[in-house]
Image (cartoon, rainbow, N blue to C red):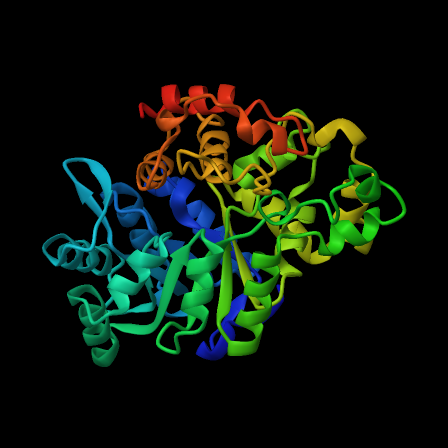
Length: 384
């Protein structure tokens, strides 16, 4: 296992991490996964999940193995469990007991990384940082050593850039994968799949994301990665926006080659999943090469598939079409909509239900996506 320094925190983290979200089985299953992680040298765990079962299973596994101090844990503040449901909140009457519950279930008196949980709107970020009771509580935890470093989780490059400019926030948990990052290098699709294809695959990301990664590198703001597999969609040629399947090793390599990235949080529910991710450490350059797959992807792969490039904007109703499509695509991979995706969707200023089917966006989409139809499906799936 290779280790990287997480920005200015000084923490040495395994480049392959453990995202605990999908660890929802029995204690014995959690223990087997934790053992496999430790045997592989994995030492960073993200725990945003507020539900008691997952917290207790993971915490009890670390206690049984006597290994709490070898793990660097990202523990989230603002992710709460209310009436059997996940609720994101800044209300300290909910935030404090939820964080105290996290500490208790992990049998610890500190979190290595105290994460400001899920901030996707710049105005919400500014409100939190403007000496709000929420940030004052985090500062108190930091001063007491209960939180040793402060981080923030977001999917929005604009929020991430604001965080990277704030010395008080030392690292971010950010969504990184080729589909979220990439777009054609020019307005001509033939350029992307022609002689410039390889360069496009390497550098063809939105300017906002390229700027973010460079800024984090400059300011020493470490990045840990979520959604590196795009919920598994990138493994299936039929669902991948590229019309070709990536491997876990290629997805991991893509994330780890972004500037400032220290570790990718991979979800495991069995030891075999751990082995599949850790195979990256011994993979050949050819096995890691994601540019080859993208360069050889079928020319028609983008058509009809949203790659979240943003060319559809502006929507006259104010719908953030790429973000709605991203949440719809993630949710449609599951039999029921995950609580976290539903909450992210409902937090949008304008949801798909506001679509008036004017089709103006469709004339701007370079990939022929039937946006109005997809907005209707999203509104039906999410209920608004």
